[in-house]
Amino acid sequence: MNIFLINHYAGSPRHGMEFRPYYFAREWVRAGHNVTIIGSSFSHLRSTQPICDNPVSFEEIDGIRYIWFRAPRYSGNSYKRIVNMLIFSMQLLGRDILTRNPDVVIDSSTYPLTIWGSRKIAKRFNAKLIFEVHDLWPLTPMELGGYSRWHPFIFILQHAENYAYKNADKVVSLLPCAKEHMISHGMHPEKFAYIPNGIDLHEWQETESLPSEHHAIIKQLKAQEKFIVGYAGSIGLANALDYLFEAAALLKNEKSLHFILVGQGPHLEQLKTAATAKSIDNITFLSPIQKKQIPTLFSLMDALHIAGKRSELYRFGISPNKMMEYMMAAKPIINAICAGNDPVAEAGCGLSIAPEDPNAIVRVVKQMMNMRPEDRAAMGERGRKYVIAHHDYRVLAKRFLECI
Image (cartoon, rainbow, N blue to C red; front, side):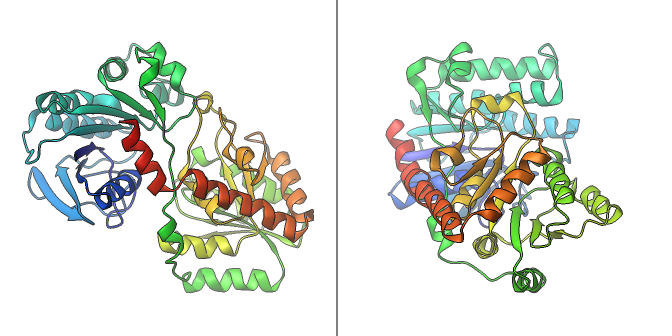
């Protein structure tokens, strides 16, 4: 079968995030299918951008054929990002670069503007059209960015979303509780399929040691018999780490406790400055590490923290990659996200609390510190078993094709 997967932000081990398109495509290639990924030459998510000297460039990675459409760079959520989206979507609609006749066209959406180009390709070759929803647009910029429903860009996005639900043969959602929203915008109920994010088990078998600075700091904390609560990932306002910081301040007299934050982001310097100003010495900030070093880092933590801002958008459910990695590490999780689903509670692998509540973080950290080590280990192991059973990309990739 020839599969075309269209994802503006598609990445790979060579380029960095986003990895979901790559993991699915790799499994489909291993199963004997031909897979082409079409993406933009620039994405704010990638650590390395593809080389794209021509309007269209080609690349092969692990048997997957990548087609890159050249689009302008941008930073933040400026108008240049919208220009980037529009140019990519128009190129998809106007260019004829197909050398294989697709049997399936997957429009993998963060924003839905690519649906018109995807449907044009599917219709031309009588292929099935799958609309894969990562985030609900235009609801996301409306609820998070405060845009009016009558804003011209929002109006176009809403038209595209409705068009996608109506014309797709199947709608695959990363959000488990989004079905009713989709039905209200024109989707037939039988089209809905929930396929969450997953984990690549092989990555947890080929790990790498930590950078020397990270190793030395954690080794010293371990020698002092510290209970270490860890976090790894982006450090921005959306990650709600200021509340973890406040909890660390409340717990600064707990001499056997330490917090480690690994990553970078727009909120990092503000937290560092506050830690210095308030003489908070039970929290350490470390630079980002490579993906293969993540399992090594997590193995040295006693508990792992994940959080999000209080948002109505989470009512449709969550499927964060970070949570899957935490589960795979077999460490108890402190989950401070209020959503339509709760993977931590479902797996029994941690403690869930209300978001934006430093006192609640203090309470569960103390609770985990007071647990017997074997009980914490059992809690973490439940998470590992859960993610292997429900979130192995080999299983999810098969489910994806079965739903087609």
